Every structure is written in structure tokens, then in C-alpha cells.
Image (cartoon, rainbow, N blue to C red; front, side):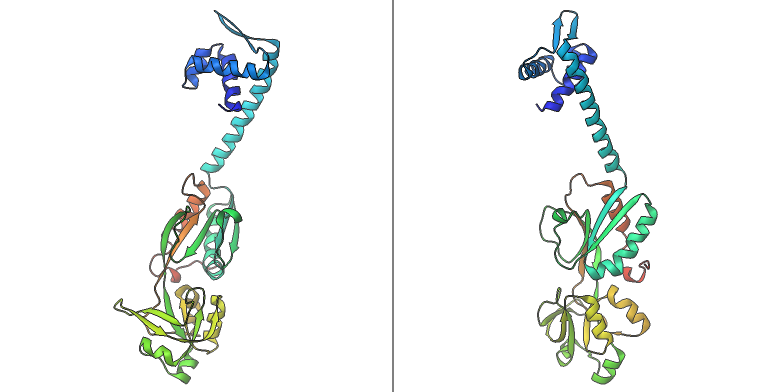
Length: 304
């Protein structure tokens, strides 16, 4: 038995004046409590309690020990109560992680809206395109796109991230518009290397058929903003997530090509360090995100 629980038992024996009453409070037997107090006395090499048929009384050493133990037990209870209250409320500091483009374009306005609903909560946003170890980096919840590897992390599916093909009107006027996936081989392409890591694009047709198309990347980047900028600058045909392309499409800077064709959609998950004893602030944030990534979500995102 740990020392703190032994102190708790000793305190309750003194305050109830009975080994049997203390045993009932701890859901154990009187001999167990008696042995525990005796073990404490043996460890300290001093008698703490006088026992007789009418009950127990403190020795001089026992009275000193009781006062110290009472304070320690009370401090421990207060510490646990503070943690329980914090665990049950959406308050404190919430550390949120995401990739750079998704974080800047999607998570910032969502986080600001969430903060307005929870003014007592502090939020720390961290955006990186490399893999982040949630435990090592102290991240409470991260948004990840794509298939999740098997792990001990907790995870909640939120929706999907659709992709499309785009180019600038000037580029299409100059070089022509592809009509079928095989036509991409005749055009310079703009590739997001973190997803399309090689020179082959796996494309889904409007009927859901998968076709493989060799392409010739003119630009390859691990930054979606760079790929978008190249498309706006008439450099070729880009594959982009809809949430990245939507504003530029609305302004007419780029247009969709091969309508109905796409790269496979990415799953969007909220992940957190453990599926057990999830803090209320994390549960509240995930509940806030659920329903935000239904079909067409990129058209309804709040603006930062």
C-alpha cells in the first residue's frame, strides 16, 4: 500500500476513533487497517496509537504525526479536485496541431470561432507539414489528412478532403484544355509532393473508375500555396484540394479542368494522444469540429 493511503487510513482511524469504522470507509477489513497502522508504526519505530477496549487514543508522537498527515491528505485532495474540475470543463490551454495550408486556411477561422464560444480557453496553434509526435510536442489534438497509421492515438473521423484539377484561363487558352486524363501527359503539371510523391497520378473518373496517368511535373513542392501560385501564374495544370483552390476559382484566377475527375479524397481525422481519459477541452473541440466537414464544407468555412 502506498504511503499516502496509509496516512489517509491513519487519519480516519484517529477521527472516527475506530479501526472498524475506518475500514468500512475504505471498503476493506478491520484487520487490514490494523495491520497498516502497525506497519506504519514499525517503519517509524514509534507507537502512534494507544489501543484499549474503549477505542484508540493518540500518543504524543501520534498527535504530531496526525497533524502533519491531516494537512498532507487535505492538500492531496485539493490537488485531485483541481485536476477533476479542470478535466470536466473546457478551460485552460488547448494546443492544436495541423499541416501549414490546412491550418492557415481552415483551422485558423475555426479556432477563432471556437474561442468565441469558450472565452475562458486559451489556444496554441502549431502548423507543420512534417509528422508531429503529439506526446513529445505536447499537442492536445491535431488535424490529420489521409489514412491513419495504426497507433495508440485516439482518433475521430470528421470528413473528407476532395481534390480537383485546375489551371489558369490564360494557360488553357495558350496550351489547350485536356478532355480526358490521358491528355495530362501533354501538359506540364504542378505537383504537391507530400501527396503525389512520384510522376504518376492516380485519378478517379466520374464513374468511380481508377486510372493511372504518367505526368511531367514542371513544379514539385511540399507547399500547397506554392502549387497554387504556379497555377495562377499560368505554369501548368495543378492538382489541389478544393479548400485551397476555392477562393482563386471564385475570383476567376483559375478554373476547374477535367470536371468530375479527381485524385482520391483524403480522410480528415482529429487525433489526440490517448483514447482514454480525454480532457473535456479536447472533447469540446472535437464536438465543435464534427459536422464542419460535410460535402461542400470548403464553401461554408468561416473567414479569419
